[in-house]
Image (cartoon, rainbow, N blue to C red):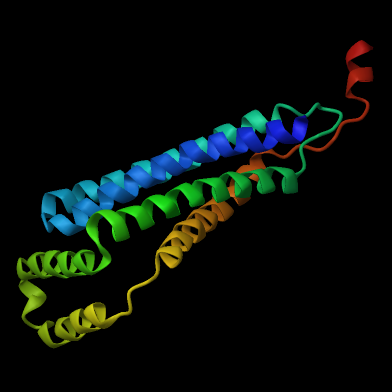
Amino acid sequence: MEQKTFWSTAATQGGVIGLVLAASMWFETYASLSGRVGLMGLMLVEWIVVVVLHYWLLNRYTKQYAAQFSVEEGFPFFRGYGYVLVLSLFAGVILGLANALYLHGVVGYEAYIEQYADALKQLLAQSPASSSMEPMLKQMFAQLEAAPVPSVLQTAWGGVTNSLLFGGFFGLIIAAVRSRNPQPFASNNDEA
C-alpha cells in the first residue's frame, strides 16, 4: 500500500511542477514568436520566477516526503535525491507532452520555425549592430530553416531531458539540505 501512495503522491506533485513548467514554456514560446522587445524583457523576469518556483516546489515536496521518516530512520541523501529525480521525471513527461502538443499540434513545427526566424529578424533589425553581422545572421537563418524537423517523440523527450537536468542540479542542493543521519537512540534520549 505504501508503494502505491509513494507513486501516486510523486505523480501528483510532479504533475503540478510539470504544469507550471508547461505554462512557462507556452508563455516563453509566445513571447519569442511575438518579436516584441517588451515581452522579451518580461520573459526574462518570468524565467527567473519559474526557476525559483521550480526549486521551491521541489524543496517543499521533498521536505514533505522527508517528514514521513522518523528520526531513528534518518533521511539519507540518496533517498532525497532520488525523490527529486522521480518528481522531475513526472514533471518532464507533462512538460514534454505539452511541448510536443503545442509545437507539432497547435502551431506546427514548420510554422514555428518561420515565425521564430521572423521574430528574430524583427528583433535584430532594431539593433544597431545587425548590419555588421548580416552575413553571419543569413547563415544562421539558413541553418535554422534547413534543420530537420524533430519527431513528436524527440520533442517530448526534450522536455523530459530538460526537466531531469534541472531536477538533477536542484536535487543535489535539496538532498544535501534535507538529508539527516539516523539517530537510533533518539527516542531513548527523549525519555531521560
